[in-house]
Length: 265
Image 1: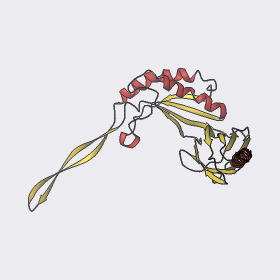
Image 2: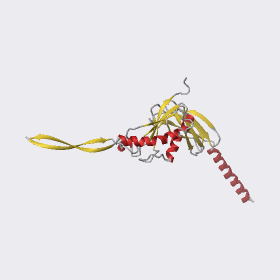
Image 3: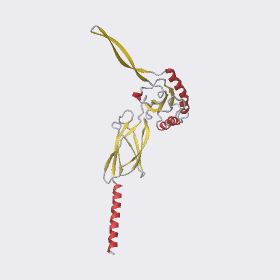
Image 4: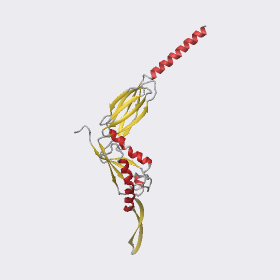
């Protein structure tokens, strides 16, 4: 009988300790903090941050307009859906799991967003196979994604430039340069080399860009929010040197054409 009573007491103590530990872990506070940066300039950004936990709690805060810093208190182990946006920032969503801890902790997490400014190359996409005129399915989806951007950034206008950067780009070569000098009444030929930047043929660039243009125009014309806000233009210039720009150069470049604060009259 005594053994049964002792086991019952022990079981009760273990159960209580386990429950207390569980309760403690789920009432401990965790401070989520960090900085929001612009992915283009790496400068801090002030914007709206919406945070929703897996327990149904919802917060709406702002990062500091000067420092980009933000902070919010949560419970240990919570999972958070985070959405960052503003009139001049492309809406972006993230998921975050806070550490499960038994004592107060601070958890630092930084975010990078697309902060829109006039003239900015907001998107650089590879929508065509090199040398091809037929847009890929992936390329179509990329252009269609502009509709989602304009759903939340109704104050922005874009110019979509169609290029041949992926096919025709600058190259460099070495050119021999000879010079003759006199040394002790004797002539000496010195051979040196200089770097020459070679431009691809303009007519080939124009031919490829013009064949791609209708493909992009057709998709842009299908955008629900694109009318009067998204414009398609050709870009007949050549791509940069692979050593500078990288080998995977974009063939569609989306530039911010106009941006207005919707709060301004």
